Length: 232
Ligand SMILES: NC(=O)c1ccc[n+]([C@@H]2O[C@H](COP(=O)([O-])OP(=O)(O)OC[C@H]3O[C@@H](n4cnc5c(N)ncnc54)[C@H](OP(=O)(O)O)[C@@H]3O)[C@@H](O)[C@H]2O)c1
Image (cartoon, rainbow, N blue to C red; front, side):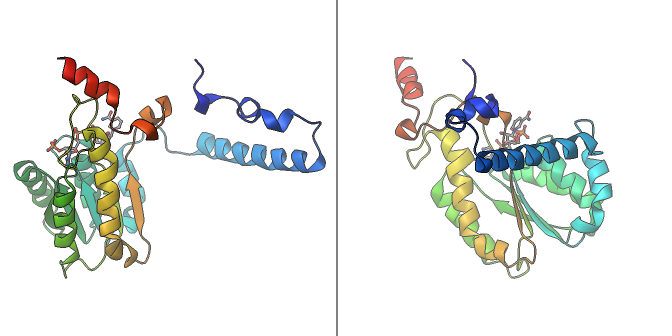
């Protein structure tokens, strides 16, 4: 079956083709087409692409990274979060907050950053996104840090994928709890620090997988997975 997201515009909006186009219809579709064209043009003419490295981007945007306080979640060595933190450290952010659930793994990333960039302040935040109480504790901790008065960039990177069915301690399917509910709660609980920045950014690292389906709000705890797990 054709995925809804990939349907061409006229198939997505059949109601627009019901009547002969009025001047308003034409004007709207012209605007829409020209926006799409502009986006397409900017992608086609961009000097960045799939082959661009993080190091190249950091070099180009070093002035924007310098002096910023940046918090990234999920910083296990070798993963995207750790590589992101290690790469941006070269442009001298004021502070990097490394958040994760495993102290030893965070320490390894901290050591890698500090040995290459001794001037960059690195702070460690214990954060388990699969537990609301742990998320609340982590938010309380960071909100109490006077030496981090604001967070300029929050990168919600941590996540799990295609894990066996299970529930978080709060009773939510654990991929949904860890990837969506935990980060949402965390982001909101530290919003004061984020809004204290002159130019705050919140990045949510996602996946093309979201194109494959939608959240089933009537079954957010994935009953099928639960039934399968019970059969084992
Ligand atoms: N790599 C890809 O091709 C790809 C593709 C699409 C999307 N993504 C997304 O990109 C992000 C990073 O992926 P990655 O490939 O770097 O994965 P990864 O190496 O498995 O890193 C995931 C990170 O999330 C942490 N994490 C997992 N559960 C957590 C929890 N309950 N609380 C706090 N931290 C937790 C992990 O910590 P532990 O080591 O302690 O488990 C790890 O540091 C994820 O959001 C992923 O969905 C990646």
